Amino acid sequence: MYGEPLLQVTNLRVVFDLQNSEQKRIIDDVDFVLNKGEILGIVGESGSGKTQTALAILGIHIQHPGVVKGEIKFQKRTSGFEDLSSSHIDKYVNCLKGKTYFKNEKKWKKSIDQQYKLHEIRGNRIFIMFQDPKSYLNPFWTIRKHFKKIVPTKSLNGLSHDEIMTEALKKFNLPIDHVPDSYPHQLSGGMNQRVMIALGYACKPDVIIADEITTGLDIVNQVAVVKHLKQIQQECKLSIILISHDLGFISKLSDKILVMYNGQGMEYGPADIILDPKHLRKHPYTRELIEIFNESHKQGYISGEPPRRDEIINGCRFHKRCPENINNPDYNCSDNVPEDFTDLVQEPHQIRCMLFQNKGI
Image (cartoon, rainbow, N blue to C red; front, side):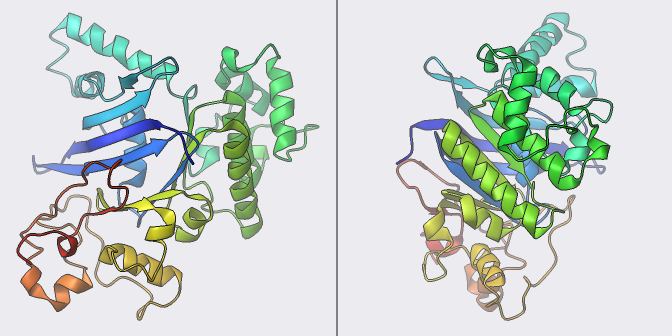
């Protein structure tokens, strides 16, 4: 039995400007609830919006400015919730484009002040691990310096940074004779990934976001990563968001699963229900992914091409590749838009599909 809600995401949207002066919702009405001590898996093909969802939670859209809307409520350590999606994200991102908020010094200063509040969240309460640790570990810092710079003082519990580092490295089977004074390029991909996990463990966060952290690793290191994440979750009683296109990796750890396609959540619910191939209520996209994973798919791949980043699709976003829509055009999924998820607490299993909604079909 898991605890009360820790992170609640409601109607999350990320809107990017396209070159033709149009706008596209890269993330469109994504909803999920992460409870204390729970592991949520976010799965989908490349380009489905998994990573953008994680970046939006932390307000990280510096490389490609976009407007973030919706609610991202994060439980305070005292009581109540704080809204990470309050206007500081919109204002900060729009400031990067110039014009509007530069003209108003008070609004500019306020947006910067609010943006800096996220630094109290990033790394401290929400720790994110990226796909390629060598790209995100500072190449000019030794591993020892990473621990000194990243691990917050209040996580030390009276110990020194070196003592915390030694404990964390030993826990994840990293040799302490040379790793502390090594640079990231001097370590293998698997060792760098374990360094990231050790940093996450040392920071004592409430939530860890693990973004495709097994990609590029051999099977031995993949198994080790799964083991270490489960170890952290059980020992620290923290919550984890796993992001992956690998349904096998997601199935080993997740309590709940969010299936994403083209920036939207297609299905959300308990892992044992979503991953059960015999369960009848299942989104066609989810069914295709599971059949491919179980090697029972007729073709071995989903027909059609994933949507381009600049492509705007009307109706259901999956309708061009959906076998149900192709075989039965009466569904009219090219025009009808499926209803969004509603009340995730009361209805833990939800599907965004015309097949399961009363719209005259």
